[in-house]
Structures are given as C-alpha cells and as structure tokens.
Length: 187
Image (cartoon, rainbow, N blue to C red; front, side, top):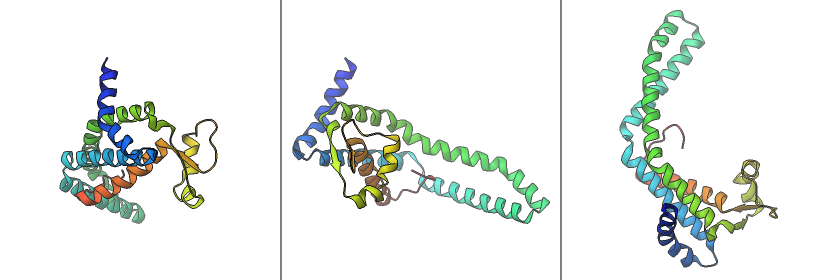
C-alpha cells in the first residue's frame, strides 16, 4: 500500500519529465539528476552553518600544520603542546562531522526511494554509448569494476545509474558554487 502510494507520487512527479524527452530518456535522467542535486545542495545550504564550517576547517588546518611542524622538529615542548590541543581538535572534528551528517540524514531516504523508483521505471534500460575519450576521462572502467554492466552489454557504455551519477556530481558542483557553499572536506 505505502509502496504503491510512493510509486504513484514519484510517477506523477517525474513522468512528465520522462514523457517530455520522449525517446531521449537519457535527458530525463540528466534532469532528474539536476533536480536531486539541487535539493541536496539546498539542504546543505539550509542545514549547515557555512561560516562555522569555514572556521572549523581553518582551525583543523592550523592544528594539522602545527602537528606536522612539531613532529618535523621533534621538539618535546611543541609535541606536548600539540598533545594538549588534540582533545580540542577531536571535539572540533566531531562537530564538523555532525554538521555534515545533518543534510545527509534528511536527504538519504528520499534519494534511495528515487533510485528505487528509477530502477523500476522505464529509465532502467538506458544505455549510453560514450566516445572513447569520455569513457576514459570519466574513469568509467573503474566504475565498471564496482558496478557491472547488465548482461549482453559491452563496449564503452554506461547505464542509467552511471549517467545519473555523472549528472548529479556535475550539477552538485555547479549548485554548490552558485549557492556559495564551502566544502566539508569532501562531497
């Protein structure tokens, strides 16, 4: 019952996009990737204090530099000072980690539901033939080590999930820049 309700909701939300692009369903995956990236970036913008995040990153960077210098010089006083600061550093690290988890907690389940819907929809049979330079520049052979192609497919291709990931990462980068988000030590 609940799954049917979710499926109907996602169909009403995304089917117009799929039908708009008709036979070019790979463009529908591209647009869905853009929508999901916008929503997750917006969640990051609203749920993470960007100024505090920048402060924490600066503090961690200076602590790491201080630690490297103390180890390099092997000065016992400097090493003792760094040891004392380590507890403070760990609390800053914990705060930064919790800050980055907040948007993930809010968006994780909805994104999984959208992936499930895409795998059940007519988008799951998309295969995109890539030019050889794009195939290697985008590191698709590495992806194929972890996410194998469907039976019967070979060559320089990606399926809907690979195409979604490319679109989502690209749009996420653009939206993060447009919204002025700082990086939290990674994606």
